[in-house]
Image 1 (tube, rainbow, N blue to C red):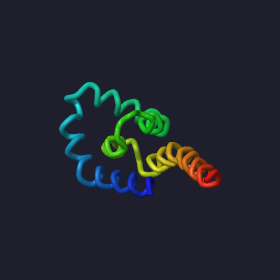
Image 2: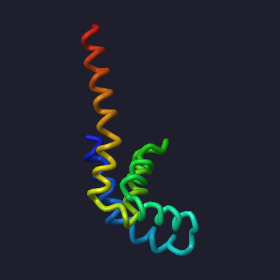
Image 3: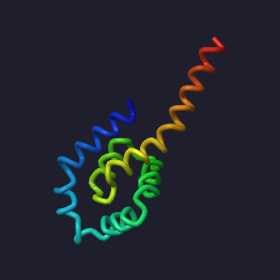
Length: 101
């Protein structure tokens, strides 16, 4: 479910927001330029680090979708890397809780 929602947010951001945001910020915002440079150098590593930020998932998904260096494969790999350990954790806790009832 989380992967599907992330993919949907990425698609919406790419289709509807990327062009507008990039044209509005490129060359005008120093922070955006620095982030775009960091992502261009190491897109997977930067995407995983962004996934660890304490921001809402929607903000992280849309933020990654507007950065041109973050292609779909990199986005999915970073999302899976971040999501899979938590899926295992919550599944284990759920099974352990049911077993002790």
